[in-house]
Length: 392
Image (cartoon, rainbow, N blue to C red; front, side, top):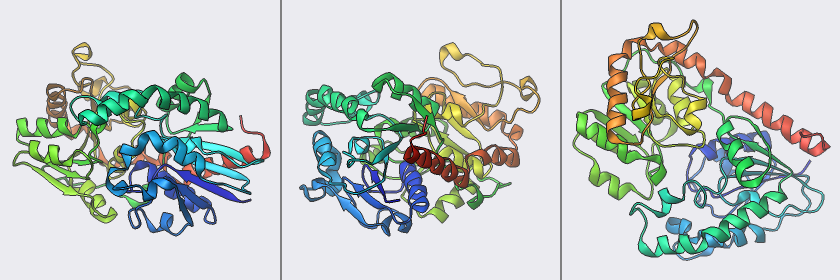
C-alpha cells in the first residue's frame, strides 16, 4: 500500500500537527504534501518524511505572511501532483482536503474544520480591527469564491472523519456529507497526575484571534492573578501590550517545558471556541482542571463541576456545590458561557471557591479514552475500510 499524507502547512506544532504526527507514525513510509514547510518547525517524526511543498513556499515573505496568500491556496493545493498512490490521507482545516487524488486512489479526510477562515470564524479573522483594511477588503472579496471552492472540493473526498461531533455537524451543514468522529489524541502515558500546584494559571496556545487570549489577559489583569502563556502568533504584539505585571508570555517551549508547566499550574484557561482542542486533554492528563468557554469542542472533553447551572441565561459560569452531581460524576473543569471578561472572572472565582473538589487522579483517568494508541487504531481501521470499499 502506497500512502500520501496531505496537511495544510508545516509551521509549528499545534493540535493539528499532533494528529499529523500520529499519522506519520502509522504510515512511516508515506510521502507528505503541504502548502508550506518551515524546516525545523515540526517534530522529527514529521520531518523525516519526504516533504513536497506547493508554489506558496517560494512566494515573497511566505514564511511569515503565508496566510495572506489564502486566495491562492485552492490553486496551490490542486497543482500538487500525486501519482500512483493507493490511499490519500488528508489532514485539513483549510485547503488540504481539496487535493486532487490520482485515479484509483481512495481519499480519507481527517477534518479539523471546514475552511474556518471563510465560514464561522470569518469575523474573528477579518473583523474586530484585528486585520488591516486591505486584508479585510480582500477577505470580503474572496470569501464567497473560497466558500464555493470549499464545498465543491469536498466531492473529492471518499470519506470524512471529523475530530469532534462539533465538526461533524459542520461537515453536514456546509458540505451535506456525513462524517464519522474520532477524537484527536493525547499522549496520555507521557503525563502524570500532579498533586501540587503553584499560584498561576496557564495557557498553551497560538496567538490567533479566535483563541481569545485577550480575555484571559484582561481577567487576570483585573483579578491580579498570575498567568503564564506558552505560545506565539500573529496577535503577539497586541497581546503583549495588554499584559499587566502578573502576565508572562513565554513564547513556544519544548514539550518537556510545557509538561512541567501543566504539572505546576493550578488550572488551564481555555477561552476560545475550538473545533476540538488537545491542550485541555494534556492539562487534564496532568490532573489539572480546565476553565473553558462552554461551546465547541470543550463540551466533548471537559466535565463541568456540577450538574446544575447557575445563571446560564446571563452567560455566567456553570457552578454549584459538588453534592448536586450525580453519583460517579467526575468534575474536570468549570464552564463560562459568554466570551466576556466578566464571565471569565466569574468562572475563575467559582474555580477558586471549589478548588478542593477537584481530584487530580480522577481528572487524569477521565482522559484515558483519548489515548494516542487508541486514536491510531481507529484511524487505521478507517484507512483499511476505505481501501477495501467498506467504509460507511
